[in-house]
Image 1 (cartoon, rainbow, N blue to C red):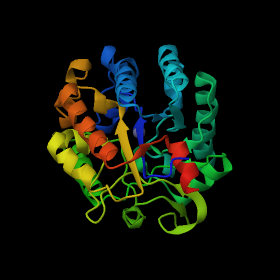
Image 2: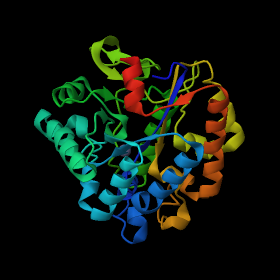
Image 3: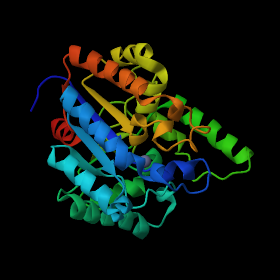
Image 4: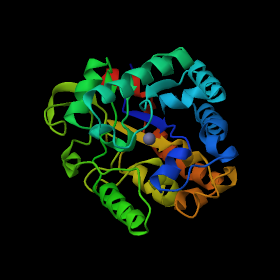
Length: 307
Ligand SMILES: [Zn+2]
């Protein structure tokens, strides 16, 4: 195992119709509807081979029904990237479903993703970062070896609360739900969950999504691409003394309005930023972390290191 500090870059492959659902927009059709798999995966593959780091790809089981998407994902796995479980249907209210339905959403996704790619997913990330003690119990029973859903970020929580209020105020209904604010008390660094899950214990290994030390600013793709290279570099430098950086991106972070997403652009400012500019900001982060001596590993490798 690499002994130095570790950085993992993971990508949630939420396909475009999930974003229409968040904004309460009608379901999208046309080429943009599959842009994450059709355009995004190729860009992620080029970026990761140019900069020589592996990716962990959190895929939604139901997206494997589209044969071309499954084939593209399989090719990524053959290139050494990790596949992980982003649930079967990406239900934003997964934690409100019955234990049986939660188990089905976790377990059928494992079967479907393994069938589609030939590689069994061992990691899990919940839709919309929402977890509960009950969902962790389901993950344990399903043989999941690590979770990476906890996002202890007050500004994200505040922004999400405001955004959802705004969507509802304009007469649309969002499919998104708000997590318990208790998640904000969770550790920033990898930990074994206790009961409740935001306390330390002896349970499942949790690899929380990146927030900066002290201020707990979000260190995720949208924040980085919206910040631009200079501020992205400043954010990345907050981490140079950390043992682990868990950088979470979404497929949409490598797409823009010209990829068939013009319908989303009025609702999502990040979609209006050209891909080339997003890549500059993401590259700036990789530069800072590389110079600081971080080794880039998949989340399953990071999980073994912190187990
Ligand atoms: Zn997602």
